[in-house]
Length: 64
Image 1: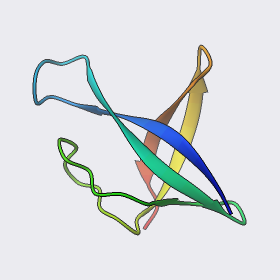
Image 2 (image 1 turned 90 degrees about the vertical axis):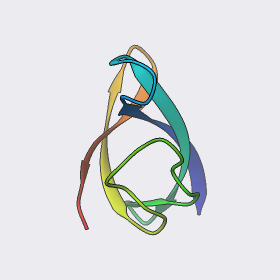
Image 3 (image 1 turned 45 degrees about the vertical axis):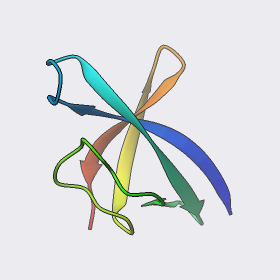
Image 4 (image 1 turned 60 degrees about the vertical axis):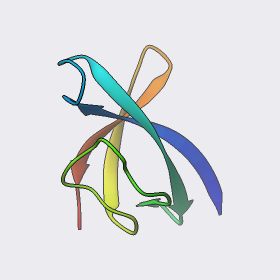
């Protein structure tokens, strides 16, 4: 199982704030590994989808 850092957008400071959260890749399922501090609507154990822009990985949506 490998880990990647995924950037999650949040509005705790301004509209362009991001929080880096570690996600494990478990056979194609991307599972959040640590507690999001600023990001709302996501939690440890959530399965997410991602997208890549300019070499960085961003959270796209919650799968379950």
